[in-house]
Length: 172
Ligand code: ATP
Ligand code: MG
Image (cartoon, rainbow, N blue to C red; front, top):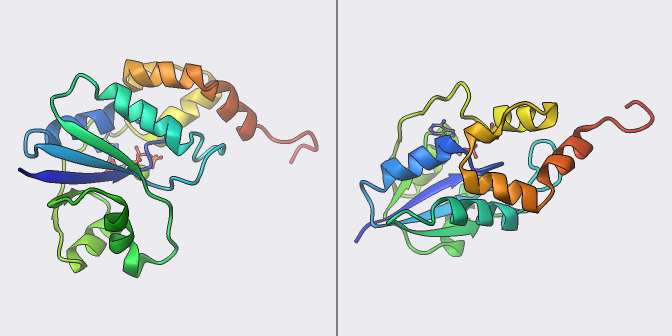
């Protein structure tokens, strides 16, 4: 039995993330998805709450054979103990998947095996691109699983990101 760990902010969960999960699924039996910056929401950079991101992930992976656990991870402004913080919140895992240099370094220093996963169509499958399209009213739906479109509709996510990204009435 192997259990993996994969962390992201998932603002929102998009088709790149889903491809990563499908690739990891070939190597592990179970996967913990850490929802980073869990306390952040209602901003242009982090529009969705941890709860909304749990829904996006759970509903997007409902047809997968993989057992998955989505665990909110709040930011800790102390990198040296961040791995312990993650481990304290999650089911035990054997291997961490990341391409992020800081995350890789922190796990390796803590003695956790790290594997990197390939990038999928990164020029468009990027959270920043999805959020920009949401704000501009361009096609973002084709970049995310159908379940994510439904969650965004349910929580009024499009209105939210457009409103919080707008400059205020003083023109600031
Ligand atoms: P943002 O622009 O908001 O940072 P993001 O697409 O990088 O969005 P994250 O939540 O930061 O999303 O992603 C978590 C991890 O998922 C990243 O560190 C990255 O390694 C991986 N990832 C993101 N997009 C892709 C992709 N298209 N293909 C493969 N891996 C990806
Ligand atoms: Mg990123």
